[in-house]
Length: 266
Image 1 (cartoon, rainbow, N blue to C red):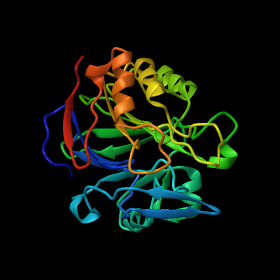
Image 2 (cartoon, helix red, strand yellow; image 1 turned 45 degrees about the horizontal axis):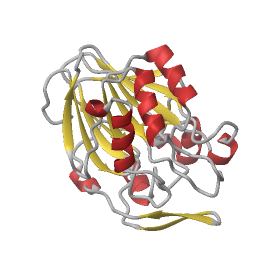
Image 3 (cartoon, rainbow, N blue to C red; image 1 turned 60 degrees about the vertical axis):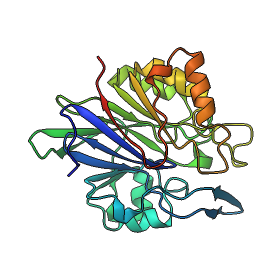
Image 4 (cartoon, rainbow, N blue to C red; image 1 turned 120 degrees about the vertical axis):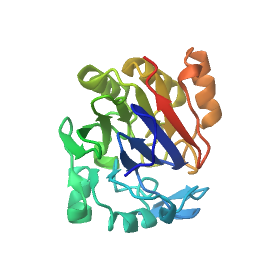
């Protein structure tokens, strides 16, 4: 059950990295749970370096109706504390690969299929799985399966949660089938690691601005653009890119712990 917000609104609270709560239609959603402290996080012979902890601990989240988990195989999207949180979550929607690795705690949501979540005041919140490509073409065998989500419901804004997607072609496919969207939560930061030399694993700031145009999104909240050393771009480059694209009024860059209530501007 979410805290009270205006009817037909979406409230986003940014907790850090890819993690945020979304209050919509009387339902609270949580994206990619990451609640560990800063430090080194090994992946085989490589490591990711976390530079800041979460703005809120799991004990401060309040009730969460569903977790939207883009993928489980990277610690910057699901860390140790996040995994422990999933053990007690009511519902976790993610990839088929995540279900294989994490077990029955995960409900697999294939691309273009929809899960309907009851709303307290009646009706349902529709959560649709959508594609995500976590790197350049041809790198899925290296980075693994990832998903995004589109959230919608009668009288509510349509919300796109990108997950770790680096492909504008994927964004175009989503826009063609489910667009336009009212609010886009875009994982940005132009992430780069030795796993994919010379390629970005998430959208660059310029690509995030292009994605907003493709989606027809009236408002955008960036996620997953800071707090890890492998991000090559940040809040400043997002602001610069959106200003250059004439989209500055659509961009809402939140600080850790900040919350914003967004109304449809149509």
